[in-house]
Length: 275
Image 1: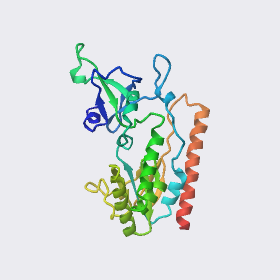
Image 2: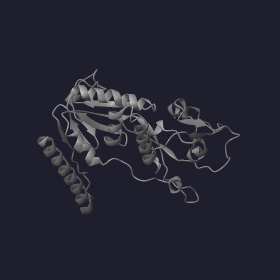
Image 3: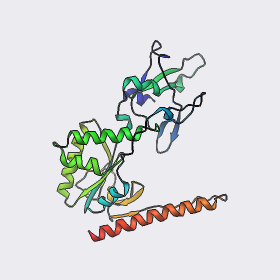
Image 4: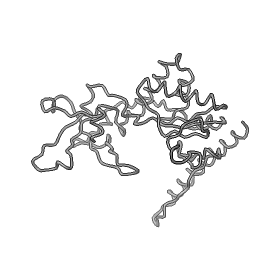
């Protein structure tokens, strides 16, 4: 929460501003994975049975086709993947709409019955709100259009080879791949967007863990699949929960999902061999 404030992604609401106009308070809770992060619940309903997501326009679906992104990626000899760091939180929300993203918060170390709970506004697009996917995709689309003449290759990658905040693209020459990477970084910097978690099957691309071990030696998760850069293959993990109450419908659902992934992998493998 301190990071939100320090980065300008959240601002404390002064007492004289609090309680003015229409407002909605978002519940929030911690999620502990590789690191602790906060999740805001846009679907939670208030005492009147209303949720913030009920009042938001979600916008049309403008996400890239996942299968097409994977297919193009497999047609290149050299490739790289990366993602946008804190993508949603890099997009600012108009000030007149920020009262719909208010939260109440008090530092745990200052927790005392006499301490006042502070009120904050979230200043950027919030994950778990129904409009967040459209807003983020629309920003990237506009960025590509605005700088298409100056950065033609990067704009094409941004329009075709991104899936939400992940990019998966390539080239048949290492020099061209490096030029595309540098141009893409330049284009993203125009919107103060940073790319991280770089992975590639060529040492031409500086990867995030190059100081510890080559990224090519271990599989990395990309778009729901596991890419082995050194071997040039895609795999996936299968795991059925060991649950005595596992229903037949759940078994069929899991089998159907993994069968669909298998078919996708087979098509991608055949496409790669044909290329």
